[in-house]
Image (tube, rainbow, N blue to C red; front, side):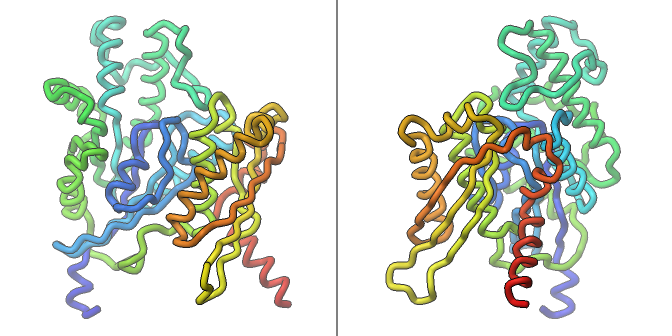
Length: 366
């Protein structure tokens, strides 16, 4: 690239923050046009910091979006690791998007009017503690005001992170296709008081409404810089990790209760087909970890039926990803209390897994 062209390129890292289940991964996938992050209806689906790269032609720019786990008060070692992923994303950011689910915020506003008669949002700190994995803050049996105060405490935790930032912050209201237009303006007014946002942009990732405007505003705010990734690369994730995530996505979809949140996936074998093979076949073996024998029984199912469903759903997605037929072998291992094991949680990080693989390969060659 010529020096003049390089100086005109704008680039930077954009961290995406939000409470669990606000649509961060859906937005990332919509922006990149690729399935960079797994998406389910369950909160806390995202556990790792994931980069999605977007090339913009005019003006020339490369935006590196950093999808992060949902911000919530940590309760387990896994939660603390997820929050650390958020902090690490904020260390390298040039700009931050704070995502707020417009549908949930409207519901909270309704509860607020019923219970506290328009008390200021930032004073609603009565609730404490994060919601249990797989649930909203509070159970269905809890009164609305307890749900509201717990959610307010968690939202305040999110905004407390934002207020410490010294970079531009955009407020992005998601899922606006599910909210009446006359509810958006008062919603924006209420949330704008939480921080001096550089921009407020309502979007619908599902309908791609507002995405072009969001990208334009981001490019305007980014500094001139270098290209961090090749033009044709849309994520920093290695194939092994993306495969593990697709298997975990299938677990999240196929199982309920506490099982999805007590499950982790580790790729034990990933054999790509030989070059120029007539019928290329990728062979993959993966271990699904859970914490209790009862969870293992659920994951396997009667006569192995549930594990077959998980494998079939994952295999179809993996074949689309790798572009070959896939032989997928799954087995379930009980690792009691793994979410509280710092060593085990750290081992799930794909960056650590790559270092381990490199070390093993070096040992074999020596």
